[in-house]
Length: 276
Image (cartoon, rainbow, N blue to C red; front, side, top):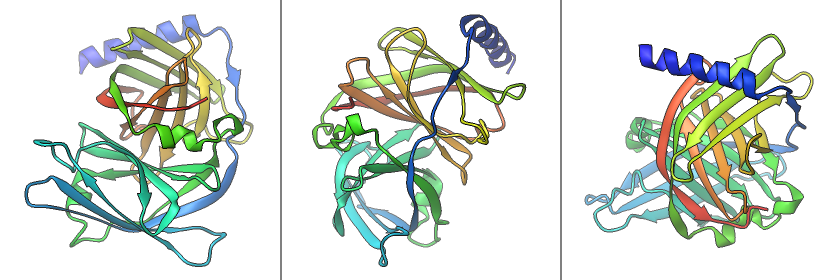
């Protein structure tokens, strides 16, 4: 605990020194609020296949989309923690589902509507998914934000199923500065050996604690970061994109409003993409 406090103190000092100005960002365009409900995940006895089933409600569409699909893990792997990408909902080909698992017992689910060019983030505990056949999971309502026009190929999801390695995040520090309602963030990307620093100002009227933002460039390199917020689990969901805009990965942290030092995440799979 003392080590964590020391790291947080050092990082905060480093952020203050490295961030002479705060970058004001535009709010992501919210096209709708999607409600995901009736989530059930079952699995085969050998944990090779996981069957997912949930409903998606949209304000612009009268009937729910029933999304069902199967995740098949590689030999010897557990489908409950296996990452997956570019899986279409059998009930509606417009929707694609992507997910990554965190060792803290948390899965990040990214739902993309390729027709509307929008996405939303959701988070689930391993325990609640394991109990889902018998115990109902609370529905989640999340903002669906427009993917930037330069990313019109559904975040490149049609090309991002290929896994190109892993990324590990170490010592992620996220400080909400109450004096100016800004976000100061820093983390280390182990595999690429880089440190990313961000100093961001939300649009007027937005609370930095719960603010979601997209495609923000690290101050000291060309990696870009997006951040989603899951209010139900008080979770932050980060997407990291390579400078070449050809690789990305998802990461998730719990209880982000309670602490500034979020620690480590990964190694998580890196996907090939057309992210720019």
